[in-house]
View 1: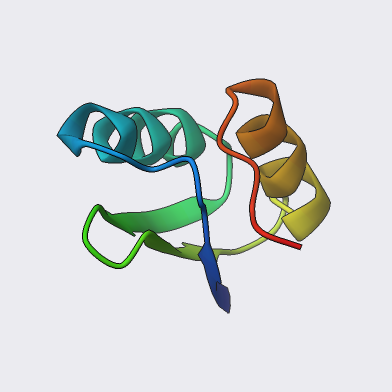
View 2 (view 1 turned 180 degrees about the horizontal axis):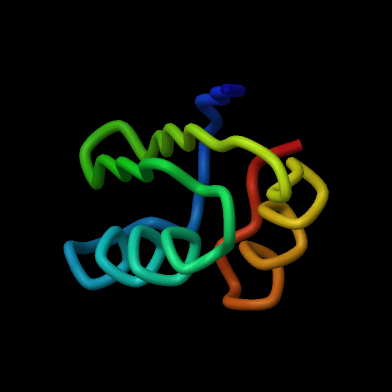
Length: 68
């Protein structure tokens, strides 16, 4: 299993965290997604076939790109 915690500057409310958790959670291989509205941090845990590249691309697509 792989895990990554990163900042998403566009998080501003509970709806944002819910959207991130639901959308990323639907990817095959994603085990858990936790988004925190206060810290703007997201932690994702995944196994194959999911990849960081897929997760990052989806976040960009739904307008919650990770901070670079």
